[in-house]
Length: 431
Image 1 (cartoon, rainbow, N blue to C red):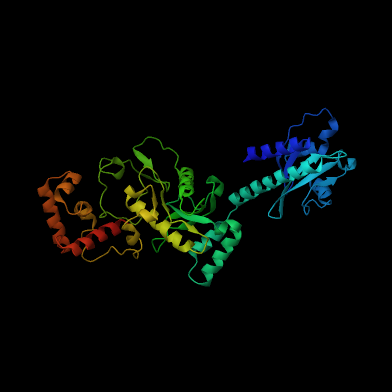
Image 2: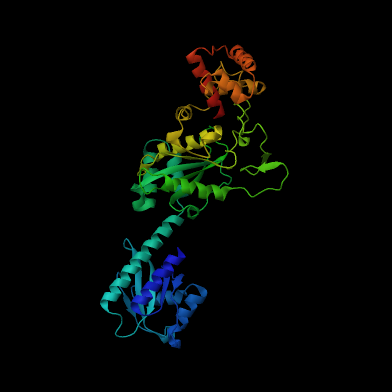
C-alpha cells in the first residue's frame, strides 16, 4: 500500500512540476516526492519538519486549515507566511472520497501556477489516493463489536438493530457478496487486526457456539467476496489467519504444541495424523475434540450471500463446518458447509443428541474399539471384506466384534433403520 501512495504522489509531482507531500487529515505524513532543487527555500521549516518527524505541529495545522482546506473540493492556494515558517506559497489538493476529506497533497506554488488541465489531472490522481486511504481505513476498522452483536443477538428487533448497525459501519460494502468463516479453536481472547487478511471486513471472537457452556474461543471472520459464486477470498483469509494463529515450534520433547497453549502427545501409529484410521467416538472428554491434525485450527466457510440480513444463518453454517472438521479431520482442515454431506444434518441436531439409550453403553470409554469397528463397518456400507481390510483384522474377528456391538446395543445390523440409528449416533458423538 505504501508503494501505491508513493507512485501516486510522484505522478502528481510530475504533472505539476513540483515536489509533492501527502499527509492524512490529521497532518501525519504518508509519502513525499523527491527534492532535487538547489533552492534552499524549497525546503522551508514546515516541509522539513513534516518529513523528518512525519507530522506537522498543531500551529501549522491551524494555519493551513483557516484557508478552508477541510471543506474545499478543488485546489487551494495559500500564501507564504515567513513568521509561521512557511517561506513559499503552497498549493493544497484536498484528498477526498465520497465527499469526505481524508488527506491533503501539498506542493510549492509560484505564479502563474500550473495550467488548469494539469490541475484537473492532479485532482483525479488525488481522488485515487482518497480511494486507497478509504480502503485502508475500512480494512483497519475494528468492527468486532458490531459483528459480535449480530452473531449473538436473538431473533426479532435485537437482531435487526444489530444488522443495521453493522451495515452502517460497513458502508457500501454491506450489500456486496460475503461469506462468514469460523476458525476453531482460536488461541487468543481477542480478534487480530483485519489487516492480517486483506478482504476481511470484520473479525470477532466468541465462545464455542455448539455447546451450551461455550468453552473454547472461536474466531468469526466476515470476508468480502468478488462475486457471489466465488469463495476464493475466504479461503485466502483462512490461510492468513491460520498462519497468524500457528503456535511457535516447540522443543523436541516427544510432544506437539496444541493451539490452546498446552501439549498433546505427538501422533502415533494409530493417530489420524499418521494416515491410519482415526479412533472412534467412544473416548470422549469434557474438552471436546482436537483440532485438525497438522493445522492447529479448523475452519468452516458458509455459503456466500449478498447483504447482511442472513448473517445469523451464515454463521450457523460456518460454525457447523468448523465443528465437523474437528470431529472428522478428513473433511478439513477447511470445509465448506455445502460440502459437509450428512454433517449438515448432524450439526443441526441439539447438543448431546448422540446420547441415545441404545448406543449409550457402546460409547463408554471401555468399548472404544467396538465403537470404532462399528463406525468403519457402516462407513463401508456394511461390506465385511472392505471393513476388515481397513481395520487390518481378520474377517472372523470383525464378525465377533459386530456381534458384541449387537449385544451391547440391542440393534440388528441387518436392519436398515437400526444401522441408520447407530451410524448417526456414532457420527454425532464425534461432534
